[in-house]
Image 1 (cartoon, rainbow, N blue to C red):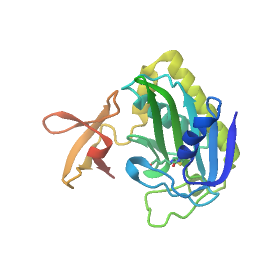
Image 2 (image 1 turned 30 degrees about the horizontal axis):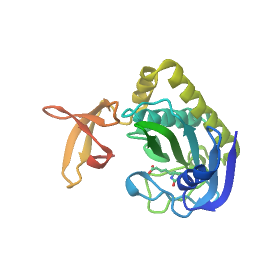
Image 3 (image 1 turned 30 degrees about the vertical axis):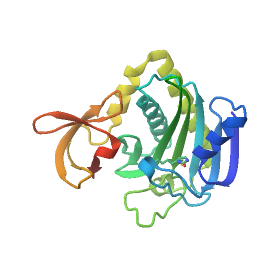
Image 4 (image 1 turned 60 degrees about the vertical axis):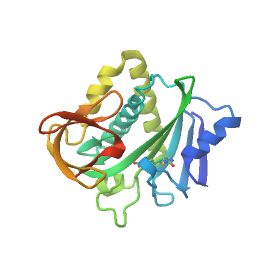
Length: 242
Ligand code: BTN
């Protein structure tokens, strides 16, 4: 496995994309760092991580086996790979909060940011960025965030964890290529946070409404059953309160 280990960088996703412009890299090449000065989160948020304590890395997937506009399957494969790895470490009450926050007992322990390079209406390559809270114990001002160490009460070897996680990502890509979408879709929905439970959502104008999550569309939109109809929402269009 090709692993590039850095001490500090702005963002491993940015670094990997830049490196790929003038360097031949293996499929599933990994860039990892101890610290990011500008870690990128979903919808423009920043990903904060204490220096040296957590896993911060990006994986290159050349020619991913997904067709546009069904690229959300990448999020599904990666979310499941993380969940399976965490199960191996006996992390309990795991759930995937749409679209791809990994929760343990309602606390976020991992986030994913996938950036796709599109060429001739297909995905040329994907940069899969993963932040996983491993040995950090204090998350100031973030009551709904946790780490593996906080949950398990003991420190975790980050190198072993990284290898297990990459292996699982490779396994899920293979499963998807060989067996297709149905198996992974069903598995993703089986972990979907608050599925089939009445939940409160917030719209961008701060209006609240109640609905029931019924699943996710092929385009990755959240399907929410409301009083008179089932509606589909994009990430920027709705926030689940919990
Ligand atoms: C989120 O939950 O908001 C997504 C967080 C993704 C963070 C990772 S850390 C490694 C990679 N590099 C980045 O700049 N972001 C992703």
